[in-house]
Image 1 (cartoon, rainbow, N blue to C red):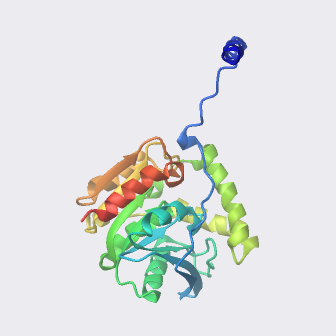
Image 2: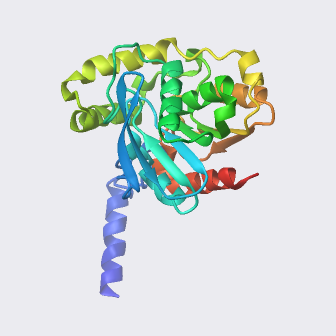
Image 3: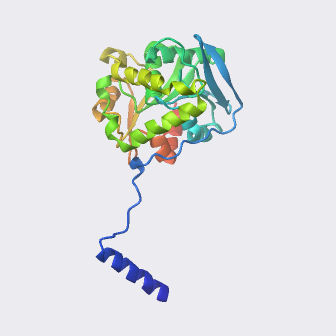
Length: 283
């Protein structure tokens, strides 16, 4: 009883001094730590179009390829790999110039990165796969669905934009600024060229400013089963662009995840993984 009385006194004093209890930070305001990948069945470097593309393979079953966002690396998918590897053959890769992969001399772009995915699929003898993309990875997924639908079984596109006009000013977001600072540290740790982050970042940001430019006709041409997915607090993607894509792609589902942001798969992995598993299991 004395302890309870003491707690009430402290609470009342705190309120009187204007020190109300602090609410837990909302999920969309947090940038959880980058996960680690589980132990892979195999890893390696695929020689693709003059670069070395790092990849890892987990589990067995129908192939699912996870494509990460710009400036990031495959480790960001650690929580999703753990959810999927008991049901599917899961392949992750570090995109051109990202993570452990080399950059090459060609200007980085979504068409080129889509070609890299096809090159890895050929190297691993995968004729068709489901594509799960986040941000730039989702744009690459759309590129594949438009130009190479014969290689894609279905597409889960999270936080994509179809045009540069669909992107917000991420410099105003503390969460995105924190991500970019983390991306620099991770690049310096993983990259075969750790001193080149400034040039790499400039190349990616130039791509963001000038690409993609998927036309309405191209979006209408997609016949791959597709979900257009985003978060209700996405600090990078304008909701109207998400709605636009979902409206134009024939038969597409649109899913807006609540109380999360551009990093939903880290902020609420249970919700994200349940949605992803449901999508992949749907005929």
